[in-house]
Length: 154
View 1 (cartoon, rainbow, N blue to C red):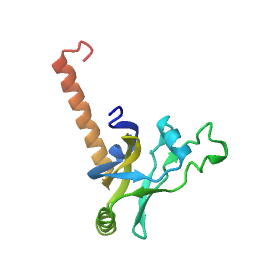
View 2 (cartoon, helix red, strand yellow):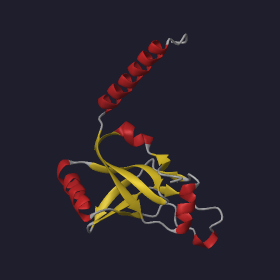
View 3 (cartoon, rainbow, N blue to C red):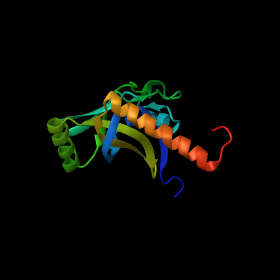
View 4 (cartoon, helix red, strand yellow):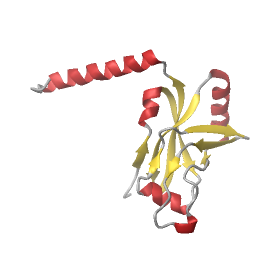
């Protein structure tokens, strides 16, 4: 069990802009050069989102840089990638996003036993005052931790 779970990329902007209600794990339908590029860590989730169409779920806006040695086998870096999930999970997500105003946002890409996985989150958007409150809470916790450790720079 050499690499049980190895995180390649995270979407830190999602944690800043959304409340994460639930998380799900989805497989990614990729081509060989895309997998090699992800293994090198050349993936960006910053402005990505997920759509559900005809009972299938797709990741949009996810940028996987072309593999340097991939020549003609490289795909479009911004192509829409199909996600692999159970039908009941997809239908549950579809119902929640249509009725209650949730969004499905990719949170991280990682490998589990050699397979690329995407962690997606069922998210609700934060308002500006929520973002400020979260930032203030983090800052206060940082100050408390610093004082408990007895740092001289605090």
